[in-house]
Image: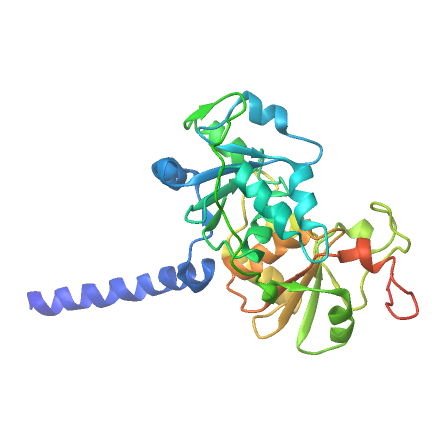
Length: 304
């Protein structure tokens, strides 16, 4: 009788555990945890290289005042200098990694001043593009870390030069304008516009663009309102994210292309789809609207 009761309890425990395990698998594609929490980082602070990625307008003052202990500072100029060229610049990227003290064997954690520091996941995408798969993102950023009174320090951290070398480029996560054009109208491809709605509709101009609107067929899915909790800039739950994207027709069986003004907001959508929801085929159109709007209007159409 005791053994039978024990077996029933074990079976019930497994039944309740399966949804939790499944959720974990959905949250972290391929079993690799790319999203880390403050508690995890505090316990592993001495085994990873932590990098603060600046924002625009700059959050350098916040870094100088009180940042995660041991973390180094990545400026916007260096980041954009590496990611903006078509294709991204290998030499500039390696130079930036060397100055930040990153070695080829390092596990890297990226964070910003707040959860809504948009450039952090741009840096994340760039590192994955250049073959560094040992990179993670800190949920909630410095604001959450400091709120929890975790180990911090002030000033500018100077790193010893690193030896990181690019071994390969991951072209499976990048797409160019000509190939985006070929995908327009395809039932097997969905295009996600990660800009704010006013830019998507063409009511407001962002940057120096020659045409207003969006790529034909693209979905209006602003990176922040779609993916983040407004209260603290942490990610929405995987179940909520799954519902939001699937309701728009962004499903795992399709190729997904993300774009914005210059590839940075698009990288945030890429991270959610690729690493939190486990979508197998997600690409960032780095040139984005900044490039598309200036191309031949007879060849590269727009919608408003």
